[in-house]
Length: 278
Length: 257
Image 1 (cartoon, each protein chain N blue to C red):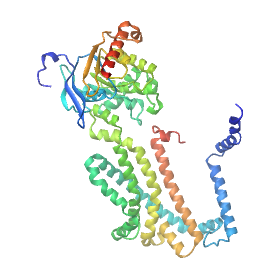
Image 2 (image 1 turned 90 degrees about the vertical axis):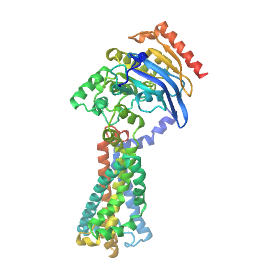
Image 3 (image 1 turned 120 degrees about the vertical axis):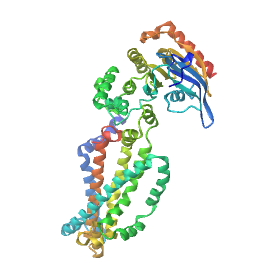
Image 4 (image 1 turned 60 degrees about the horizontal axis):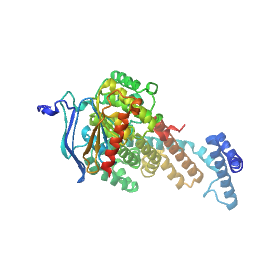
């Protein structure tokens, strides 16, 4: 082959080969370097003061200076996230099974689940605090409220969308209701549940951080990251504020990463979408 | 079944009596009466959308007739010994071949050791002994259908219902699977009712071909296929076979006209 085919393979081909060699680390590093470069460049070029955009090395310094507060805060937030997330999973599964168990239950209960979802958390939070007080309990409940809907919505849909022929198959062999649920509907709902978990995992730290800002006062020295952000903001510690944002980012990454690995482990043997992932 | 069987149905395995089905007021099937004797293979063919699959689902008890009834009896047959092969393989994607084939036994409550041994024997019979640990996504279309057939055999069916079982496969694979199906029947002696849109398949498998008319469908023709069993690939070259293919094709054209 000559002409277009060869030229097409020329520099794009080389780029592709390099891309394969670089793997997953090379490109992100390059883009990261570009961003950092223009960050410094922008600060110098436009004379941006530190209280508006601190240079990256100042953020690292502030992060190290405040490491104890940040670490404690991150641990607190991670704890609230984890507890809220686990309660969401447990509660979400039970509710999903109930919702999928009969048309009556679905039509009767689902509108109220939607109602709960539609009520903004900012409005609900003060009520939660009224009942559970300042501190971890309220933060956990707020986290739960933020992340349980995607789990319920996705799992319910999964449980209800079993293939009609497979349902017939189970009928032909006189399967009982629990056999159909356990061996057909539940495994079939797993990909949906995993989607719900991924969405919920991304929302969970946001819920916990927001919980910190409204209910973190009672925690005192053990304040979560969201409350730490409030304090840094009030003290005008801008580089530390950026460091706190980075810490929150790490928590989010860990959560989503863990759920992705879990989803892969559960589904990779049989589900097409996960088969190719390595 | 406590009622004394009527004289003419003494040997019948299944009797469809004036069977009718309507969906939302639209009549799909009308006055279908048919007796299936033990050992028969009844092929049902007809224009697309004529209610062939519906008829099979009524027999399987997957849908309730709006008129008439399905009678089992005149022998030891109960509905429990009925098996169904679906249009596509209808396997559970999260189960291995072994677990898929063993599923009907698992539902029936058979202990693991027993159901796996039995499933394994049926898997070997369809030539998939090397594939027991594979998942459905790793199988070809033909292999999936073999798994589906093996699964239907695990309950030792008296009556096997097949809904266009090999319709999605290429002709070569389909022919091979038809021959294998008849080989399985030589060993197990089930009675079958199957739906197809292939005249050649209908004649090759069936001892009797039922031609359904256009909607609302009824039995337009019932054509005997006196080829006897066992049959093999060579059967397709016999003049009686070719003759019947012509007869059924003409009957099919007459209901479509």
